[in-house]
Image 1 (cartoon, helix red, strand yellow):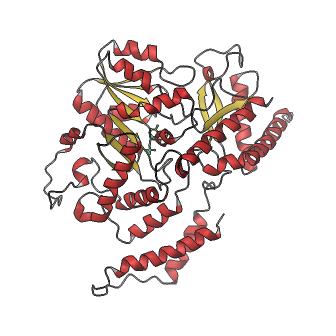
Image 2: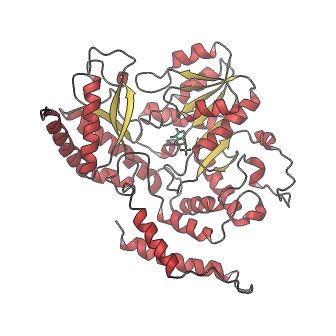
Length: 461
Ligand SMILES: *Cc1c(COP(=O)(O)O)cnc(C)c1O
């Protein structure tokens, strides 16, 4: 998988490193620890150990949410490592704090917010924790409500924060059921509704535009969890219904997005944004050992996490310079191509006699399906075998247990509404996936042939 342009680029990283080092060259030399043969041997051992992974960066890895960081992000992160800035206080990283402020503003601008309060976090979990913590401060004792397709982190975070949590049923397309939501709101106990734009399992998009209409009649806060799907606000090829949800995003009270999911960043990069910057007052603290030495904003004053990787901010900032968040730009086109890849896979699956597809199209770039069989149990067993066989053909998919109600009712006529079925799931988040659909399809076809062969082999007694 190694290729020459990447090699060449990483050689230029060494030049950039020398340029950075030169700025400290006036200081007396301070020797590094010895980097002898032992260190080189360990480095090679690390390379061998890391081989025990799926090839996440390759397009034939079409399973979980894994997208390789952009080379500019890798190189900038590595460069920042020699400084190892801490974006807690300005004294720990002046340049990287300024880059974080700019990078976060670019995310807020993408969502239509000229003003905001926000910062990077270690990931979507911590970003959601901060958003729900503020929500709890503003409406003490009131519940957090999220759909049964929302990330499981919301119920756990609510428990951590001591806030009651209520699950909202989803409809048969995995979106918040508006009637169920309205009857919950009538109880006047809901302080915040979590609206997911891009659920983790299937990429469904809650009807934010419709939920905002309910906000005119009931008093509640809206937190948008767009950890996965946030960047799709730039994609021009989504259905009008889904576009309408994204168009409404600027009216949310808080938003979470994970640059380490679709934003081409290494892990350790989430982001929380608040529309009302006065919520910063809840972060006030009086630490004797924090070294806030100037009146300028220290990001540690508006973040629950104390030490944070300045290198994450540097990598994100650099990536945004190369592939800015512009509708119709290269970054937006890559998201559009991921959506098209999921639609193309769906079309092939729907036309195949071997598979059953859900009764709705992929909203974003996640496709799921299962094997055709007479009961959910038999479909589940066959799906598991296809998963194993596909891996043997170097095609890496994911598995997910999902409600049978996502499939047409005639799929398994004797089955109850509440039943579930093991599905194959493919997150087609790499821009190369569209061009690789034929390869993916061929391997999947070979996998089902092999799986069905195993199925019909009589069990020896
Ligand atoms: C991934 C994800 C999270 C959790 O974020 P991490 O970065 O894994 O901590 C929360 N919500 C949604 C919708 C996600 O997709």
